[in-house]
Length: 295
Ligand SMILES: NC(=O)c1ccc[n+]([C@@H]2O[C@H](COP(=O)([O-])OP(=O)(O)OC[C@H]3O[C@@H](n4cnc5c(N)ncnc54)[C@H](OP(=O)(O)O)[C@@H]3O)[C@@H](O)[C@H]2O)c1
Image (tube, rainbow, N blue to C red; front, side, top):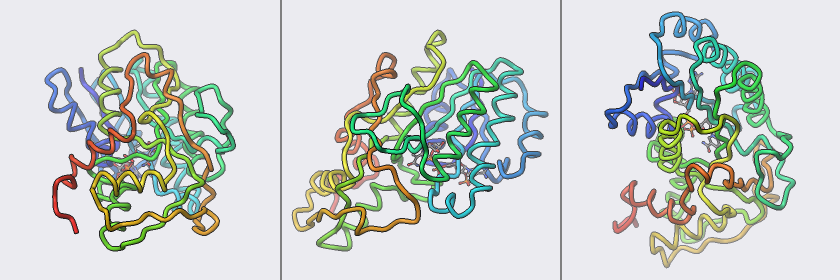
């Protein structure tokens, strides 16, 4: 099976490319922003004009810096939304299934139980808004799509392939301080890229799997405070104390949903993700943080 992966150098794209390239059932074609920049629609047009027939398209590309998206909405919409118009039109024209990743930030966070796929969307920041518009282009143009809404992603390459994500941030804060502060009033569903990779492989291997929107994250949910505590516990850092704070004491550039837990019930019929605590343990091991004198 020949697969085009867009955004192959990000934290998800790189793990997915590595896994598919290592599997003899798949041939991968990859592009990143230095080859095809979504800010420039003619570059996508050029790609599709010269692309040999592929069996699948997987789009891992996005502008994920939520603060910068807020400051530059037109760039956010070009990359996260409008690019999905030509991508999904191309897939539709050639009847190619498309796997695309969206976000928990399509929700406003006002719920108190995990969000399922039928819940009303209502983004409260530019990033969420732009990703929702991307979903809408796909749904309008194409029938053969899997939109996986994922959340608080951590993978070994780090965001944008730069080695840093929420877990690495916690580790480096704990490395430098005896007391670290994290908020207790924002609930997230952490998502390990290796779990997403396993789910994508299952999709590729299940041709009759129903198209549509799916929520995918590691099972369970936690606050940033609980996540930081678990990191500290797994690393055995008895001298580091995690202090609870409120998001009011930690102002951010953007409004963040208060509660973003995702229900994975629908996707679990295909692949049941690990609990976030177990995935976190796997990640710390993959990064070489476990069993090592870090401090
Ligand atoms: N990170 C999260 O916490 C999170 C949460 C929910 C959903 N998601 C979604 O999950 C997917 C994967 O996220 P990720 O964490 O792997 O993101 P990431 O590490 O930031 O990677 C994004 C990829 O998109 C590429 N990209 C950025 N601007 C581009 C442009 N103008 N043209 C073409 N490509 C461009 C990047 O390439 P360059 O590095 O070369 O610019 C990179 O390869 C995305 O759809 C994201 O929206 C992520």
